[in-house]
Amino acid sequence: DVQLQASGGGLVQAGGSLRLSCAVPGLTFGNSAIAWFRQAPGKEREGVVCIVSDNDDTVYSDSVKGRFTIASDNAKNTVYLQMNSLKPEDMAVYYCAAAPGDGLLHLRADEFDFWGVGTLVTVSS
Image 1: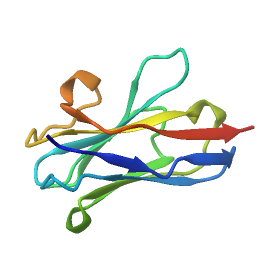
Image 2 (image 1 turned 90 degrees about the vertical axis):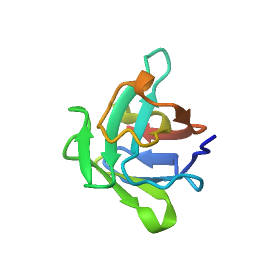
Image 3 (image 1 turned 60 degrees about the vertical axis):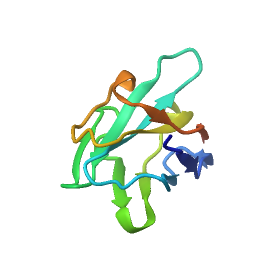
Image 4 (image 1 turned 45 degrees about the horizontal axis):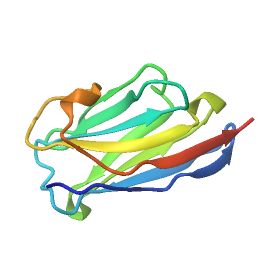
């Protein structure tokens, strides 16, 4: 199995920034799809951004486009999510997920086989 280790959540004021990390030590990124999802209380899990590191293709949800940036460090088997201009509506538990060898960009949870434990992002207004 593929293990994902998400970290970097915390408390930030609206307008601030956080960087989340997702380490995937057992996976050669290659054409794997790695994504971040989030789930706020009482809401469905939402796909935020996905990357396929072979070609650095990315897709962002409209709600974060222009504010969040995903990047992968293949040497460290780690994907980062830089979150800027955070809003109270960004507050959620953030999860990273992997679809090994998939090669396609997805923002649907059912496309991903492996999930990490979430990390909580709290944005105060």
